[in-house]
Image (cartoon, rainbow, N blue to C red; front, side, top):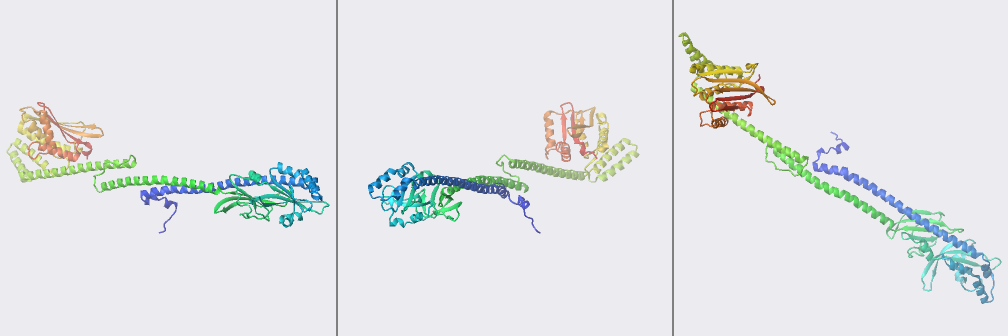
Length: 604
């Protein structure tokens, strides 16, 4: 057989234990969604933060380029003014015979001094010349062979354009400094001499304009080394990042590892004004990735807490819940094995506790029902034993009822033949009574009419004995068909006999026994009331209470009230405990015995 797997199979949790079901549902409803949402949020946060830092770094890089463009453009304009200034041209092209004349001319010019003093972006202005009549004074410096071998000097002489270069210098303490320098040739018309202008940008000024507390900036020009860096340690070193020098508008944003640490990097090229030189600005964010990962770690920790705390709560809840379910199952298992000694309580106030309470009620009902059933079985067994005892006594005392009946019939015929009709009638009534008893021995039901006929025959015999001393009446509710109702056999005759023996024993005349039969509706039940009432001496309340007790509890030592006890037990056995004999008596006013029978159990 091929098993089907899928979402239907997954959600078929009934094959797992309750604790496993809770864990699976927690995983499916809480853990998996939180993990998926958490991964999405972490990735989204990462991309958003990367974009945010990249945008800020690009903005700062753009700021630095604007600063550099402003400075280089200003320096270029100053170089234009110096290059084509007439006084400068005159100083560089004139042959001086007197040094004082040269000093006076330079001092009189004052243009270079003005720029150095009034422009903070200018660190120094130097004009290198090969005019042998000039000496090193102020901004003018005579070249020597070492100077003429400098690459930047030869490059300046070989072209007419301006270019930029990072140049190093040492102070009197041999401290090395780097400056961005504008270099250009000063054309000297009609002169055999050459001159090169070098304007160095102030590093301090550049630092005040470029430096940022957030980012590290490195600046280089063309293929030269770094001439500016925020931490000063990278001056004069090759840029630690790849640059595609062949691209005039090179721009790169990305990620780079510096000293084992991931950094955001933004490299852009600045094409200088009126120059072929390209300045490369590199902005580094050394704290960006660390900040992003710190945020991601915090988010991850929050997600972990969001999973852990509910996980612990689910663990304790699952243990508590399954423990209570396990206890409930154990108690139900005990009840199913007829072990009714259950726990008194089950902690909690939910449906499980209510189920346990229902279980206790059910077990209590079962115990009560079993007790009633057991008691009924005992009563039935006792009744059966007593009935067998009575039948045995009857058989033992009567020897052979059929023989006696046949003998009585023979005697009745002889009396009738002899003309003694009264004796014949008495013998006939006695035979009919014996036949009724004989026919109903061992049967369960007879009709109410047959039972009343038997009582009528019994009273006729008593009339033959006592004459007019005892009277008898039967009062039946109008419309009541006696032959349609079933009744236990020999139920009324012992009651009537008990009324004659005990109720009318002291009655010398006008004794009366009345049998009343009527129906009554009580609640949802239709009941038949059979009252056997005499007008005898009655009894006291104490005697009545004692009689009530005698017909409820069997006492083998007594000889009285056995008939009423048997009738009461037979009625409770067949009709239920609530249907029994009820006695009503009052001293000097007679006694009434009421039999209450449910009609639904009497109808054929």
